[in-house]
Image (cartoon, rainbow, N blue to C red; front, side, top):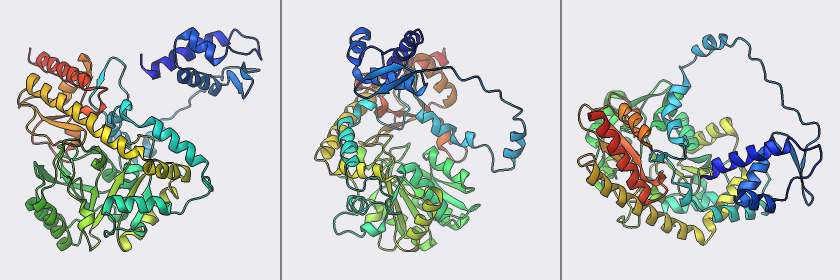
Length: 478
């Protein structure tokens, strides 16, 4: 049983028990509840927190947990006529729920009996919970931890990102860094700062649906530029700039989502040259650099590390390698572009909370952080190796190529296969995968699926998930 269902079941059991208590009666101790229900102390603590949030119990430090006085369930609120909202919201730029649907799909938590090969985040078992807990505890004791931070972010944290992105003595300094609320927050700030509403923005095709959602929500028009095994097609990139007159290109040069492509050395040079000639910015989303596998070759430097002219705006986040809850990232830029980024973020959200920045600084300064990244790389390699072997065995021909890094595989489906129908069939067999259609800004040239092996609990589970996917595919052919 997973932790989520254990907490819910224990809370329901305690709720029935406590509702029979007189007001003020003390509940059994946490130790007694652990022994009686055969759950962990964390599960007991979370279940008690659920009841406290409902107002059913109160916790008195040093004394225990007691049935709350005068508890009564809140009456159900009556909803009035909300039909007027359909008219009011239709005056805007369109339904946001449709834009967010592909992103929400990667955030949904599947039922306990379903294998997750869909999520954009590594499995919870791969996250450094002890390091995070220690960092958070130390951050809370830092002098001034609850003071307002500088709008750009803590100087020490900005310096760490500058060194991590550009190298020691490289072209990026702390003054070129803006701390953001994670990768998605940084992406939103960047596209709104660098492109005017209604203008075209070049994107890779296929690309991360969150990029497309941000562009549409900002009133921008995505223009696709095809990707192959060596990254974005630079011959078509030049044509796209000339035809669209765009002033922004959003790309993922390393372990591109969803194809896994790594931009080749020749094309790296070409991307910068073409963008500079077009008078355009390159927004480099370096989302997967910390997810490199143990057997991967040396990684290419970020585009920003080779840019002296302020063409590249670089985006880096720690959430995938650390925790979905560590919503801390960084944008780097030179010149007036940085001022525009800063102004946009200040208008949107003022700043990233200081305690979160302090905890991040504690985390990346801990000697255990590089050890965690090495462990994460080895675990991802194991899952990838198992997933690739299972695909070649169970679904030969679906996987053309892969790169030893990142967290996902891009599957080419046989002609005539409907990715949405196969995704639904896979869910019925107990595995959650992602259809390829939402990754394309325009009509897709072929049907694909994306598999996230990082979301699997183990290499064995990744193998079993692909076995279930084969069963789903065969069920459509029968």
